Length: 313
Image (cartoon, rainbow, N blue to C red; front, side):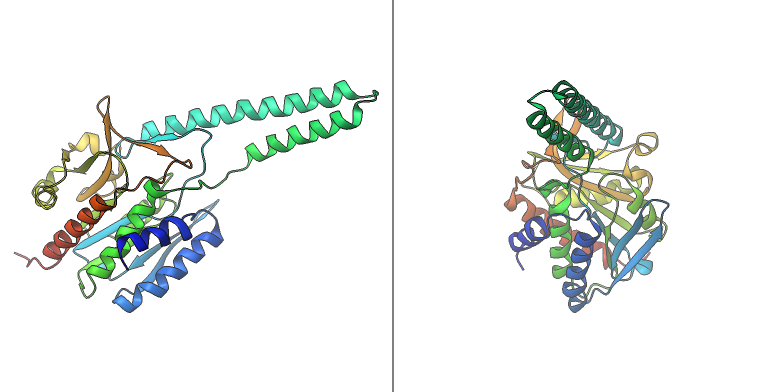
């Protein structure tokens, strides 16, 4: 399948992967498409107190020299378009906190107006219509209380999923490569924490984030992967790639803390010194720079093949 076809499949048809049923359909699709390419799929599972994490692992993770990891679950819909900071998760918490605060204010207004409407209509001829209006307002308040899936999730992270599946097609037969599709990984790092328990220490972990939108490309890594990052950047001569080498203390604030020898690739824009992805968790998250995405997929395929076949010293 072409990358465009895969975006239609994982960005539209299976674009919501939030509920247990939606995740099951996604896992079923991977189980149908990857094993014929030489990638047996297994579940890496952990039972939590409130939820169950089920990562999907394709290939021989224990002996992999290159691990390509992506989040596969999708976020809840926000009241306003959210900014997402791939390398600064504390700012993501602040964004979500502001949205939850706005949601709470609207809920209180709805329930307060419903009570006032019902109370003012008691014992009058307008009691029935006011009661109906109060019930309607209360219904809106209940709707605001419930989480809802975001309708479009190209950046978080359907583009990364489609790219990983395309890489699985192009790298079929490479025994030293494995793929990880991580559950509970788009809103927090729980799925990645579970994955980190089994990743070989020496493996190169390619963490694919937003690959669909934004004018710039950023590659974050630690000092240990400086040479590998330069090699990957050289495979993307048409794109301006911000090669960000994080020192140890700064790696501790983001996903590289779990994968010290990993590299994280994301697209977005630089805003006030921060790398940011705009218009996430909303209906506007459908922007797709397909030509650049295809270039990145080819570069990742070439890079992964080189590293997987590199002989040990």
